[in-house]
Length: 415
Image (cartoon, rainbow, N blue to C red):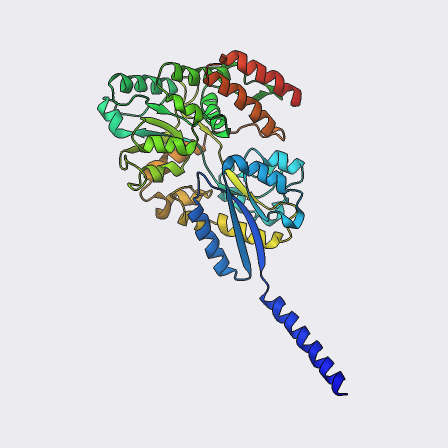
C-alpha cells in the first residue's frame, strides 16, 4: 500500500509539473524584416516590444536582412514548414509569384471590411492578387526628389524642377557655377533600386512595361527614360559612382552636401534633416519627382511593402495579431518619421504632420500617381533581365534601344 501511494503521488506531481509547464509556455514567432529604408531596426524593435508587453504569452524573434536578400530568404524558407517564418515583409512586386507558388496565406477574411476605404488603394495593391489579399500593407512608399535649398539659392534658382528637362538645366547651371561637381546622385547599382528610378522616369515620359501582355519597354518613353539616364552621366551632371550606389550611398552623398538633387525613399527626409546624420540639416527640400512637359506633372513608383503569413506557419493567429499591431493606425502614426502611414486619416494628424509638412504635401501628390512595376509571377526574372541590360547602358557598353530590344526578346520568351 505504501508503494502504491508513493507511485500515485509521483504521478500526480508529474501531471502538475506538465500543467505548470504548459501554463508558462509561450508562442515564439519568427519574423523577417528589411534592414534598409523605411522603418529602422530600432523602430521595429520598439513596435515589437509594445506588442509583447500587451501579449505576454507571445515572443517575437526578429531577423533583419538587406532588401536584396529578402526575396531569396522567403523563397528558401517556404519549404521549411513550421521551422520557417511566421511573419514576412514582402515587396509589392512579389504577391503574384508568392500566391501562385502557395507561399503566403490568403488573409482576406481576417481583414475588417471597413479597412478597404480607410487605406490608400496604392497600399492595397501591395498585398493583392487575383481578387485576394495575402497580407496587410505596411509601408506606403515612393521615391521623392530631394534638393539642396542652399545650392539652388546660390545658383539663382528659386524653385526645384517640375520636369526632368528642367532638372538637367538646373544641374548644368549649378555645375557651371562650380557649386558642386556632380549635381545629381542616384541609386543605379545593378539592383531593384535602379529599376525603381527607371520606372519613375519612364512613367513620367509615357513609357510602359507591357501592352496587351507583350513587352513595350523598348519603345517610346521607356527608351527615352534610359537615354535620359545615360545622357546625364555623359554630360557629367550625374555622379558616375551612382552606377554602384545603393539608397544608403545616395543618402550619404546628399547629406554630405555633395549633390544638389537626389531621388530616394521617405526615410531620407528625417535623416537628411538630422544634424547627427547630416551636414545639410535644415537645407533640405523635398518635392514629388518631376514630370515631363505635355505628358505628366509629377512621377512616382509604387515602392510599398506588406506583411504576410507564410503558409507553413504553425502560429497563424498569433502572427496575425502581430501584423495587426504593426499596421494599426496608432502604431504607424507613432513611428511616422521614416515611413508615412497607410491610413488616409493620418495625414491630418499632428503626430504625422508636425515637422514634416513638406513631406506630407509631396506625399499627397506622389501617392496619387504611383506607377507599378509589372505585377506578374515572373517579375523577379524580368527584373534581373532589365537590371543587366539597363546597367550595361549606364556603363557605356551599349545604347538604350539595342539593350532594351535584347531585354524585350528575352522577356517575351518567359512571359
